[in-house]
Image (cartoon, rainbow over all chains, first blue to last red; front, side, top):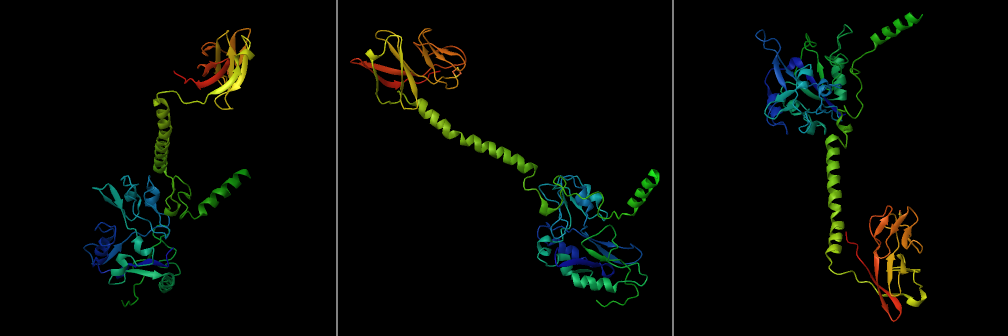
Length: 188
Length: 188
Ligand code: FES
């Protein structure tokens, strides 16, 4: 486990897509980006949010892989498919609940966010988090994450952002639930 | 009672949190997705090791082939030291004496088959190396282990399991004394 974790504050996103540009520059990414920025309500408003691999503790993509090409790094990051193992069956693209794994038809190879493993295993923030201008993507220590969680406790005693309520099982990347900070004034 | 017990159990199962336990903990070799627990010797590695080992064994037989080549391509017989065996008068016709030639580990038999005729063979049976003895009555060399019989004039096997002749020792008689001068090479 690294000292820090990736934390997404989804409603900070302004849709600048710096994270995509940064992603293409990461070593080994072959100048292709591996994350998405999506419109939350297309044609209704301009709110966007990044869609990143959440690096599940129990990753559906890796479990669905018949060749065990997707491996979990010791830091918990779910790595991109290993070139020599991937058989190009695309099971993972279907298994992932977020649609993260992408498929390279030319190379017959799946590729997905590996949390810039060469950086994050030495506790350097991933490319996307290091360029995000609005702190949507943050590289936080465990203590900072705990502070965030504390801030985000709502008084209904139920909804707690980025705590034990995960979208799909437990993940290594933590996110704040969109809209949870409504009515809070935020200063970037 | 039996029925109630069953009911309790199913209820119990429902309350178990299946997060991160579904489908099951895959802590095994064939479905390992943890990079740290990657098998050192996977299927391909095993096959490579197999082929590599076969190659190493194949190459390591070459020196023996070279030795055999050298042995076979040598034109003349090997040089053996001349060795005095026995005085001809000390052996009656139809009798045999034991001696060793060329080294003391190679036991041999000298048989006087006629007034002037003597033959000698290394007497380790060509089947499984039992000591062959001279049967005066049958006028044959006999191996007691599995009833192997050898012709006394040629050393060829005549009955029993042995397939190859006994190695003949060449002799010369000088002034009533028999000398061993060499061992005939086995020709197929
Ligand atoms: S050892 Fe001589 S016959 Fe078997």
